[in-house]
Image (cartoon, rainbow, N blue to C red; front, side, top):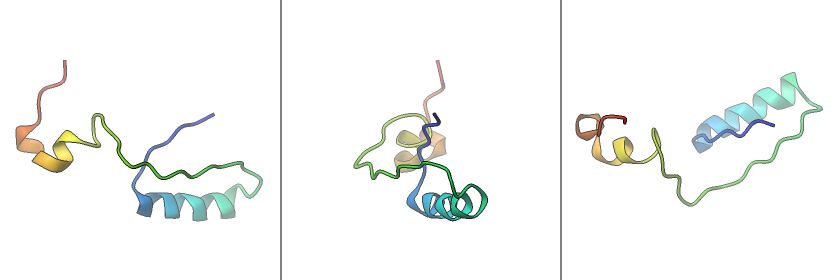
Length: 55
């Protein structure tokens, strides 16, 4: 199993690729109202210059 979080435009592209390359694959696409974590929250809203260093 692979869990992948991506922007909606990327998901549209992934769906197209899977339909063409792996038509027998089993995929579930879900919308998320909020994603919190590295690469999805802080830097997107406040810019890279305000990014806290990783522990």
